[in-house]
Amino acid sequence: MAGTVMLAYYFEYTDTFNVHVQGFFCYDSAYTKPYLGPEDASAVPPALLYTVVAGVPTLVITVTEAVLFLMQYTSKDLDSRKKTIATGDCCYLNPLVRRTCRFLGVYMFGLFATDIFVNAGQVVTGNLAPHFLTVCKPNYTALGCQQALRYISHQEACTGNGEDILHARKTFPSKEAALSIYAALYLAMYITCSVKANGTRLAKPVMSLGLMCLAFLTGINRVAEYRNHWSDVIAGFIIGVAIATFLVVCVVHNFKGSQMLSEDPQQEDMMGSPRVESPLEKYIASQIWPADRGYMAAEQHY
Image (tube, rainbow, N blue to C red; front, side, top):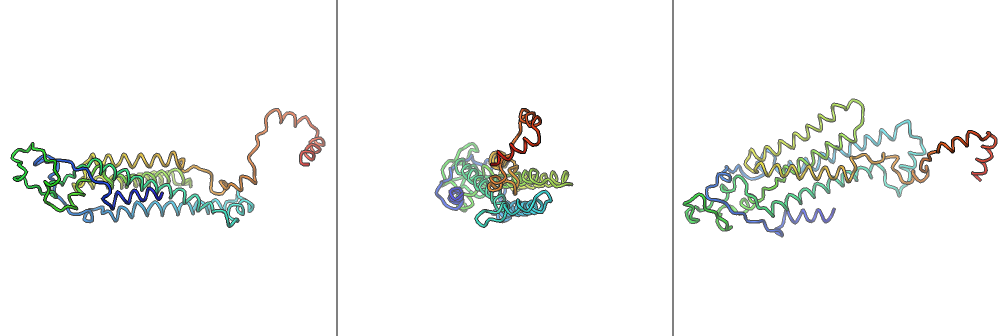
């Protein structure tokens, strides 16, 4: 986790990895869209997006796990001995904390991994934003752009703000689309697989589809504001879906691990594994007189 966070930090906030300088054609209509201001002026600003993708799943998973734990802890099917084993030892981590940290840890790891994949793609490709020429402000006369098919490949062609130009060169894949779809899919699969309460047959798909809809609206907003191409958004969706699906299916196994109170290793050792009696043993036991069975049980115990 520490290595993932550090790599994401170097991609995001340092110039350790240089962005590929991709050229452009003079007067290319694909890059002449209007520039609607910095990212903070967007309908989905980065501060809001990062807060939602980090805070909402954390809150939902923590509250849901606490409710499920309390429901299982107060269940009539559990005797006091099982409850004591699960929560009595001071050196043993509470099952609620273990399970919650596991799901949230995997989620955070996937969030940083998605950021790394997206940043790596942006650095390697250097794909231009739809508003690139608007912020680049090239001097067409000095570049000899009398013909629209002239290809400009040198970095000094732009005369605009350097930070805006650098940001306009990092659009493929779309980070906002990847993070939003990753958070939505992970949380939707968690709700679908973990919540088994009565009366949620319709509520779970409605919540899941609502989360996915918000993620798709985020991607559509990126295209509508001329900040990304459709190909950027689709690539971001693919990366987010792939990472979320891999983590849920292969790492946390669809959130269908052992139940919180029954996954205690101490409990498993004390209770022992279940023993299945073969048909031959049942037949032999039925032929033994009760007295003989009692004698054999006492001898076996001894």
